[in-house]
Length: 631
Image 1 (spheres, rainbow, N blue to C red):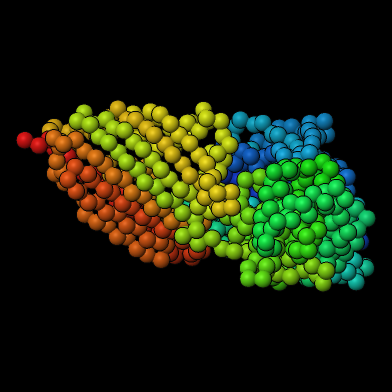
Image 2 (image 1 turned 120 degrees about the horizontal axis):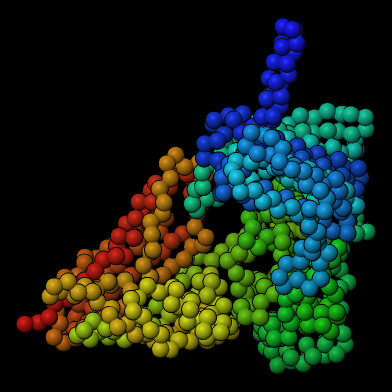
C-alpha cells in the first residue's frame, strides 16, 4: 500500500511539473523580465548552403508575450518568391504556465501577395499567422523551413530585434561546402565556433541572457549594445545569372554586366532627344533639358520580377511604356545622355539607409538606384523617380552617403553631396495686425530649402481641403481661420518651395486684468523637451541638419503700449545654436528667431547635455510680451 501511494504521489508531482511546462513564465530569470514586453525563450536558425544557388533554412522560436506592447511579436511572417518555398509551418500557443492552449494547422496560415504600393510587377508572397490571445502572459512557439533555388544574400542574425525584447537563448548555425567562401561582420566580442563535418564547414554563433533595453529617443540603434551578425556571399547565382561579389569592384562588375546593352533608344526617341538639345549651349544645359523631359514623360512604377530586382528594364521598353522603377528610369536617362555624347554612371545606393560599408560588399546594403553625371567642373546627381524635384537634388535620404558607381571596369565607391544646415532652411516672414480686442490678421510668407523643401513638397500636389487640414494641425494659433493659402516651386531648377498663407485669429491675445499677453513666437515653437533617459546606452542624432529663420512683425493698436518684452537669448552648444530677439519701435514689435541644428552622431554620455540644450530652447520659445492700454 505504501509503495502504491508513493508511486501515485510521484505521478502527481510529475504531472504538476509537466503541466507547468518548459515555457512557464515563472522560469524566466527576473533580470530578463525587467523592462521587457517580449522574452525570446529559445531561437534556433540554421542556414545550410549547398551550392552558390541552392540552400535550405530552418527556423524555430518560442516567444513569451508579457503585455500588450509585445503583441506584434506573436505574429509569424515569412516572405517567399518563385526562387524559394516555405514548408513545415507549425505553431503552438501556451498560457502563462506553459500549458498548451492549441496547435495551429497549415490552413490557419494565410498566403497572400506581398506587392507594395507603387509596384506593378513583383513575385513576392508572404505566409503569415496572426495569433489572437487576450490573456497575458502567453507563449507562441513556431517553426518553418525554406528551400532556396536562387541566392543573392544570406540571412542575418539579430537576436534583440527591438526595444523591450529580452533573450534567454538564441543561436545561428551557418553551413557552407568546403571550398566555397563567404564574409561576415559581427558585433564586438561575439564568439564564433567552427567545425568540419564531412565536406562542410559549420560556423555557429550564440548568445544567452540578454536583458531588454528601454526605448531611447533619437537612438542611432541597438547595434552598439546587442549581439548581431551579418553574412554575405562571395558568389551569387540567381535567376540564371552568376557573379562574384567578393568586393565592391566585383559587385559593380556584376551590376554592369546586367545592365550593359540596355541603353539603346528607339530611332524615333533618339531623334526626339537630339531635337530637344539642338539649341543647348553647354552639357549642363543638355542634362537639364533631358531631365525635364524624363520628368514630364515618365512615372515611377515598381518592377521586381526575379533578376529584375537588379537588372534595369531596357531603355527602348521604357520609351514605349513611359514608366519603370528606379533602375529602369535611371538607365533610360543614361541612354538619353549617351545619345547626346554625355557620359554617366548608374549608382547603387541605400536610400534612407546607412552608407555602404567599404570593407563589406553585399547586396543588402542598397535599395535604390540613381544616376551620376560627371562634368568638367562639377558632378550632377540625378534622382530619376521624381516628377518634381529639380536637377541635382537627390533628397535627404540619399545625401552624404557612400555609394557605388557602376562602370565598365567595375564598381567604385564615392560620396554623394552632404546638405548643410544652410541648405536645409526655412526662412519665414510674418506680419500680424492686431486690433484693440486682441484679434488679428496674419500674413505668412515662407521659403523651404532642400530637406525642408522635401518634407513639404507634397503640399504642392495636395487637394486644397487636405492642405487646410495640414495647416490647421501644424499651427498652434488660437481661434484660427484660414482665408487663403498657396504653395509653389518658383524655379523648377531649385529645391525651393514657397508658401503664402493668410489667416485670421479672433483672439490672439490673452487677457489678464488690464494687461494683454502676446506669445511672441507665433509659428515655430519647439513643442516639447527631449525626454530624459537615465544611464542611456545608445548613441543619438537628429534626422538632418537644418536652419530656421523667423521674423514676425506685430503692429499693435495706437492706444496700446509695450509694458514688457523679454531680453535677447543666445543658446549655443555643439548641437546647434539658437537666438531670439525682440525690438519695439513705435507701434511695431519685431520678433526674430533663429535655430540651427546639426545631425552629427553623439555618444550616449552626451544626451543629458542635449536634454539641457533642448529645455533651454523650449523655455525661450514660450516667452511673452505684455501690452497695456495707454492712458
